[in-house]
Amino acid sequence: MSDLLSACSQSALRAALDTLRDHGLEPDRCDILQDANTLVVRLTADLVARVVQDLDGPRAGTAWFERENAVAMHLTRRGAPVVPLHEALPSGPHLRDGYPINFWRFVEVVDRPADPHEAGFALRRCHEALTDLAEPLPRLAILREAQAMLEGRDLLPPEAQSLVHRRLSTALGGLEQAPVQPLHGDAHEGNLMVTRNGLLWSDWEDAFAGPVEWDLASLIWNARLLDQDSAAAEAMLAGYQAAGGTLDQQVLDQCLVARAAVMCAWYPVLYPQPDAARRAKLKHRLDWLATYPD
Image 1 (cartoon, rainbow, N blue to C red):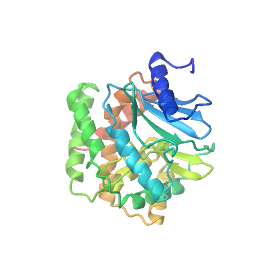
Image 2: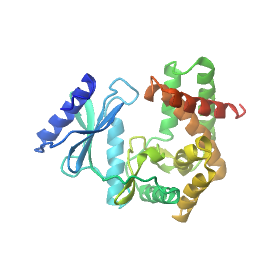
Image 3: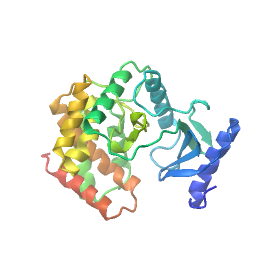
Image 4: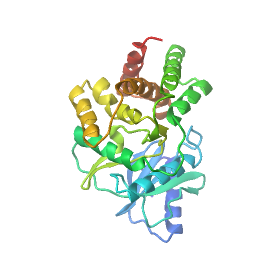
């Protein structure tokens, strides 16, 4: 067991190892890929475990992983560009010592950025495959979750918290009448893996029913509004449309605001001790949100 992990992460890792052994599989390595609210660890040549460590946070329980597993299995069956669950274990999610766990097939990452046009194209392929998903998904779930978080806790300074709550409320009202379908829910480039098998989308736990423009806003937000790379953002949208996707510019604009508000609500949860770069990104989002009229 890795001696680089905290006591909490050691417990999470032990839960994953015990679950793996319960199903007759023996780990032969312990490569830590991520150690944050979720522990991600490669345990065999082709198997990766994801373990929720924030047991008291907004994502307590297994409901989020249940949704993710159902969506990922559907997409895999449809041949969509996604990282698949590992077929050697029941899909789960598994619960061991209070830790929700699921197991994924390891994919080899290539050290190059995703092509923006290909990113939009891959997202559209997933959206198309999700249109016949039988699993019911909650409508506008991540927006409602962020709103409830703001109402239940003091996450931001009062003025910023009030601003974010207002923007979320306005966005929810504006998006209620938009057409919806199953979505990724958190379709930023960090969840898009550049692999030897091409671009693969991962991390489907935020999947919900909403307008496709939500995923597009999530994909282009950093490029368009944080990095000032309008060419990359336009290439993403062009790739989506080249794959047969359509978008409503007014709904996309509403989703850009909603995405910024959701990220601001989650920042104190994801980064309780942010470094200077994280603080600057949060300030940028808050300043941008403040430019919109009430």
